[in-house]
Length: 374
Image 1: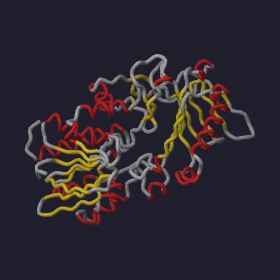
Image 2 (image 1 turned 180 degrees about the horizontal axis):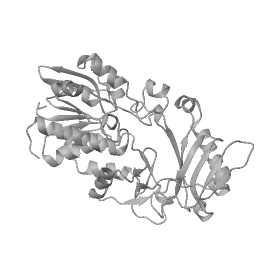
Image 3 (image 1 turned 135 degrees about the horizontal axis):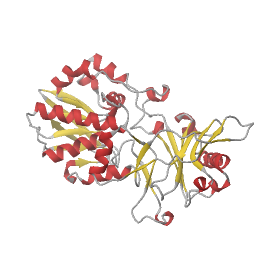
Image 4 (image 1 turned 90 degrees about the horizontal axis):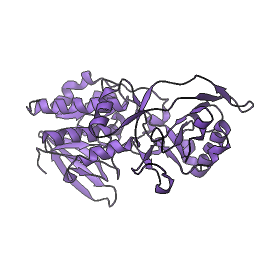
């Protein structure tokens, strides 16, 4: 492979957006993603055809990031520029609170949260839209980079096919890594190329929402809305601690989702079907027996995803990430290495907006070093 071809490691939102930018700039590149789909922590389940009753366009239910905040203008602009539509998170109606098993759930009027936006049809549609903009010979799925080193100004990458275990060697002069810092330490052999300070700096950055788990149940009707409820609930009784309306469109693809309060280890040791049943029981307790009439239900434990969470993430309480990019600016520049994961962003780190900002920053630095004018 030509040394002039920029390599991007990681096909989550940041990596895909960086590739999208390079594609538009006609900068040669290839992107490697270890999983069999792009998206990283953006993961959705497709609503079954027989469950759709209005929309002819496939709908997806988000099991990873869901919301785009009002001030996240870059995400809103990207969504609209790729042909997506935004709608407001449904919050109209009462909120349910359940404090302990000895009492009944309480209905609280006017307890709604912040104005948040969602992507119509599910956030995964943005991933598909970005992927559609890339030339197919410029990306490889099921391709895990498991070794990096820098020799004579050239990056040498060992890339393993996760399906058949075959290995290929690649080289480049410029490398973009769009991964959480701790995963860089775990998979990309920084002992071969990074200073001790940089290794420690990467290890100190928590992966945002890494040990979370989400449950989604889909419905033909938004029965909770019909009862004057927003779909929002907070509970100390049952697997889920926080619940929201998760409908894929304002008036279609109706669903409820909840953040599960169990640890990844507890979920790993449990029967997933049993946990799903407990979640449905909890929804029925909070919103009524109609919650048992679901079409599909899904559960995703991010803490048990080897390409998301590390042991350090599983052991640590949730914490917003911070990486001192300024401290390592000179070292990264000397390596022709551009970090683009959301956790290293100097703005909105960990969020979707942070992924866009970090990727934009990485591509801008790459253009500068390649003497490419804006």
